[in-house]
Amino acid sequence: MQKGRNQSSSTSREHKLESVFGLTPAEIRLALAFQSEASIEAAATREGLTSGTARQYMKRIFKKTGTSNQAQLMKILLTTVKVA
Image (cartoon, rainbow, N blue to C red; front, side):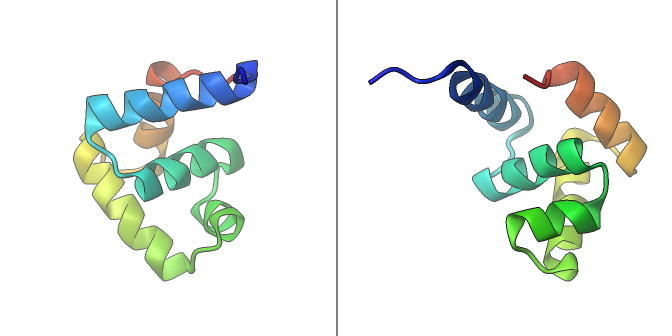
Protein backbone atom coordinates (compact mmCIF):
# COMPACT_ATOMS: atom_id res chain seq x y z
CA MET A 1 0.00 0.00 0.00
CA GLN A 2 1.42 3.39 -1.01
CA LYS A 3 1.34 6.49 1.12
CA GLY A 4 -0.66 9.38 -0.22
CA ARG A 5 1.17 12.59 -1.03
CA ASN A 6 -0.07 14.43 2.09
CA GLN A 7 0.77 11.51 4.37
CA SER A 8 4.26 11.20 2.86
CA SER A 9 4.80 14.97 3.12
CA SER A 10 3.59 14.93 6.72
CA THR A 11 5.95 12.08 7.57
CA SER A 12 8.82 13.99 5.96
CA ARG A 13 8.04 17.12 8.02
CA GLU A 14 7.85 15.05 11.20
CA HIS A 15 11.16 13.36 10.44
CA LYS A 16 12.81 16.72 9.75
CA LEU A 17 11.59 18.17 13.06
CA GLU A 18 12.85 15.10 14.87
CA SER A 19 16.24 14.98 13.17
CA VAL A 20 16.99 18.72 13.08
CA PHE A 21 15.62 19.76 16.47
CA GLY A 22 15.28 16.51 18.45
CA LEU A 23 11.56 16.98 19.05
CA THR A 24 9.54 14.08 20.46
CA PRO A 25 6.48 12.79 18.57
CA ALA A 26 4.14 14.64 20.98
CA GLU A 27 6.13 17.88 20.55
CA ILE A 28 6.06 17.45 16.78
CA ARG A 29 2.28 16.97 16.75
CA LEU A 30 1.80 20.11 18.85
CA ALA A 31 4.26 22.16 16.76
CA LEU A 32 2.50 21.18 13.52
CA ALA A 33 -0.91 21.86 15.07
CA PHE A 34 0.40 25.25 16.20
CA GLN A 35 1.66 25.91 12.66
CA SER A 36 -1.84 25.20 11.30
CA GLU A 37 -3.84 26.87 14.06
CA ALA A 38 -1.49 29.81 14.91
CA SER A 39 -2.59 29.66 18.56
CA ILE A 40 -1.38 27.44 21.39
CA GLU A 41 -4.90 27.11 22.79
CA ALA A 42 -6.37 26.02 19.45
CA ALA A 43 -3.45 23.62 18.86
CA ALA A 44 -3.94 22.15 22.35
CA THR A 45 -7.64 21.59 21.71
CA ARG A 46 -6.90 20.01 18.34
CA GLU A 47 -4.41 17.61 19.96
CA GLY A 48 -6.59 16.84 22.99
CA LEU A 49 -4.20 18.51 25.46
CA THR A 50 -4.90 20.85 28.33
CA SER A 51 -3.54 24.35 27.84
CA GLY A 52 -1.12 23.74 30.75
CA THR A 53 0.31 20.63 29.11
CA ALA A 54 0.56 22.42 25.77
CA ARG A 55 2.42 25.31 27.38
CA GLN A 56 4.92 22.89 28.98
CA TYR A 57 5.47 21.23 25.59
CA MET A 58 5.88 24.64 23.97
CA LYS A 59 8.58 25.59 26.50
CA ARG A 60 10.50 22.45 25.52
CA ILE A 61 9.91 23.14 21.82
CA PHE A 62 11.21 26.71 22.24
CA LYS A 63 14.32 25.42 23.99
CA LYS A 64 15.03 22.72 21.41
CA THR A 65 14.50 25.05 18.45
CA GLY A 66 16.44 27.93 19.99
CA THR A 67 13.42 30.22 19.91
CA SER A 68 11.94 32.30 22.70
CA ASN A 69 8.49 33.22 21.43
CA GLN A 70 5.66 32.08 19.18
CA ALA A 71 6.61 34.37 16.28
CA GLN A 72 10.16 32.98 16.12
CA LEU A 73 8.86 29.41 16.29
CA MET A 74 6.33 30.07 13.52
CA LYS A 75 9.10 31.50 11.33
CA ILE A 76 11.20 28.37 11.84
CA LEU A 77 8.25 26.08 11.17
CA LEU A 78 7.34 27.95 7.99
CA THR A 79 10.88 28.15 6.64
CA THR A 80 12.30 24.82 7.81
CA VAL A 81 9.21 22.70 7.52
CA LYS A 82 7.07 23.60 4.52
CA VAL A 83 3.32 23.14 4.77
CA ALA A 84 1.98 20.63 2.25
